[in-house]
Length: 289
Image (tube, rainbow, N blue to C red):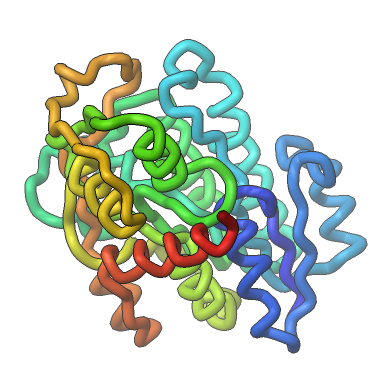
């Protein structure tokens, strides 16, 4: 199977690259912005015609959540319009599409885990752009899997885990938001789930949406405290409200726990608890120190 991956130099793309070694029967082509501009229909179609993928995994995303409030166009172009192009090409050239979306499409007011059937209510320009991307896939109707995830981190690129570890080495205490709850997701675990879906997506006969995060529930403050503890660092976490923390322009959901029943049932996937995956990631980070 030939698999084209976009956004290959981000956290998830790099995790897919690392995991691809376990799939010798697949031919992966990993691309990022310097190789492929996904906002260009012609550029993507040219590569599709030359490589002839059976599945495209779209990891490319504009993730500057606060910046998108002042500059919404880049987010809309990458998260919305580019996805529309990819979905159209997937339908035209009959290849499967796996697209990564976000828990931020929900408003966080439900109070119980969000299922795939819950109606999105995006509260920020970033979240709106991601929802537009989802809608574009449903309109084009290729064989596609939309996978919504949350609080992604890894040993690669820039992320919350790396930031907290760095700050905890420099400071005695950190103020971290405690009234936003969700689930940290290790990109390596998400990559493993994507490899499972990869074999099935061309048989979907349309678009299916799935939730995937690690198991469990915490706050950003709880997540930070665990990062510090598992790293063996001495730094106190001071829980604060979103209002007390300030500085964030974009609204974020107060509660975005995702119900993973569907993906676990359909693909027989075992999902680790977030604490266990965090320990695994920190172990990898310590090897680099």
